Image (cartoon, rainbow, N blue to C red; front, side, top):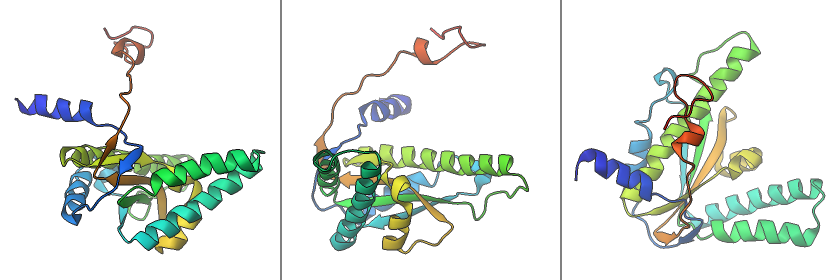
Length: 209
């Protein structure tokens, strides 16, 4: 099998496993995935990503419960009844608790360019976020190649202060995502739109076929 075939096979096989199988995971495998992550393309090569690997069960539990409480508060403000809230939040918490390891992915603007106007500074923040997304794709593909299962969740975005407090993050480190990792699990086979619906040749409206 060629290098291209191997790469495409890994890309197409990778799945977001939402119901993980827990079990012991060697930290060396996580370090390998993180090494792959930091070779991702990124804005100005400033490498604005930061990662916290949460292995300790008591820390994982505290983090997930604090985020869950913020989720409950948000849903109450949305006007949902308590039974619905508990079904939604409790179900999500139960799934996340099955992870053997959590990787909290963050960005920092510490080394990014500084602009006097909000427009360009806002774009710098987007560029940092895009950089982290590229790193997470590298990480997820590597975890899959290592025989592990994972799921990318954005819950830390909605509970940034809680995550900062539990993990002791500096003020300039912004939680963006959480990668749940397990030894296996079952995932659905998602469909993908054909290129003709999402890619265009030369100009908008001319599908790439």
